[in-house]
Length: 403
Image (cartoon, rainbow, N blue to C red; front, side, top):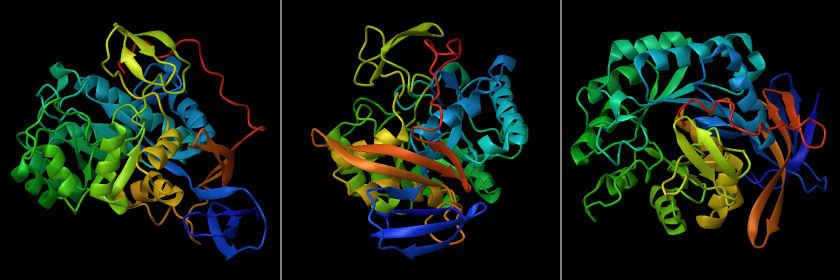
């Protein structure tokens, strides 16, 4: 039986973690001296694409999209993640979900990293600002029958849905989702106090990437950001890539929401992990800057996140002044708790042996994580210096797809 000996920041001190099959069977304090650290594997609930591929690619020549992204994510200690399908036509979205379901049915190793899918849109605000980059032609009110078609196409894997609770039909839709076991988030929303209250009463439990997908200018006291930050019943996710939320904003939001109710996400797109440069993505020329910021060429407008959850975790330590254990909790245990998966992802006997081993360094006062190993369901799926690193394409392979 494999035994991992490492410091456990979430528990304190060095522990021996004994693995049998898929699971942790024993954890014991250890006297061994080691600079290794370990935590539950990072869990990113918002991944649109990465390393040149998108999650929604349904064409036959991109059958490896999910496995490609999974391999790339594991190099950064992200053993669990939710492929995120965003607003498009009903036909395109159903095809994307069918593609994901088909791949996960026949690829158990990739499926072990993907406990569900995230539907972000099309049931969101049509208003400029809250709508974000979602195509206005495809934004529409909730349609339970359409959602059921998506769910059937995915093989029942849609586990998280982002919806704007103020739009017509949203509250009964939220209620039906929750009854069916799907977690509902509020996002890309122009909600007011009443629609927030109604959504929470209906069972909504998350605010998706709070602070983004919003107007540039808001009424200073009465606005949907304050309302959601003040809601004690719900989680909120934050894009901690250093670009979507300024330092003071990220710090204040996480402090307001609290460590137990905050979640880190990357919201990464197909240029995540790609080198800096100018890329043609669909009809747009997009530039990834040396510091990682992705913009529409010639403008300051963000065109998605180019980060990964490991970088976001380090950023949260620096920008939000979080302790290492707190930042790791926001990127692993909290998303698992949101989705009711805390019995699977954790550090105690009976939990899956889905773990990330790493070392901590500081570079110019900035915390840096160095991934040593990534384990998923008892399998060593990445080992630094041994596992061949993914060779990135020179251009995004799904460049014709929207980001």
